[in-house]
Image (cartoon, rainbow, N blue to C red; front, side, top):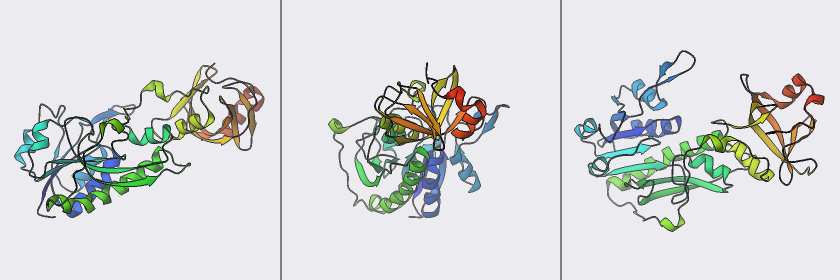
Length: 311
């Protein structure tokens, strides 16, 4: 496959293993990624993880503000195929149709389930028991193109976004390389998606980050692990935002919804709609992430017990 000219389009850490595998196995002639962003207290410009890999491998980088309006460089590279993975912009039809082998995408769900930009988060939040990777032809409609190959993965009850992200990223890279030969020799499958079976995983909103303890304990537990380590679920306590990083389930049914009913060696126990959760790690506003027991000891357990979250 080293003779195949590839334009790769991606941005976050999830796309890095995919790009690295492509560099090893194909001729990546251009990497397209989102523009550099200002971050930190000093608003320094930072590269996307994909750009760093490209520069380390001396591959030309293209960072259009709007790919729909600025794509001629990609055409000029005359790619055999365009491969995207978590790029972050809608690709214009002219690019989808231009390469000999068209444009394909590495998507982190078992399509048609969880179309959209947050499939890993929503798989956990929505209580899916399995997810996976789909290699698909791109179409103008979001994540609705024909499926080429898929690989499933069971979601462990202890998985969070970070652990599931890493597992799926590695699976995606391997599945892509295993699938490419069939695309290039034109023996690959092309399975149309059933739109009636589609579910959606739109990008996480700020409102979705706030914990609602009126939900069941498993729903709250899934929300917490489905948002950690990014962007992280939160609740308010004494009018201060507390990010909740890690929790566990417990059968305790005592107390009012949102109430801190107990503080023990396991953590801070909070009542939900049915049972309770144990908050094990948290991050107070302006402070580092910490063990919940250390947080409770710092404030004083007697000052926390009976307090209400989101009051």
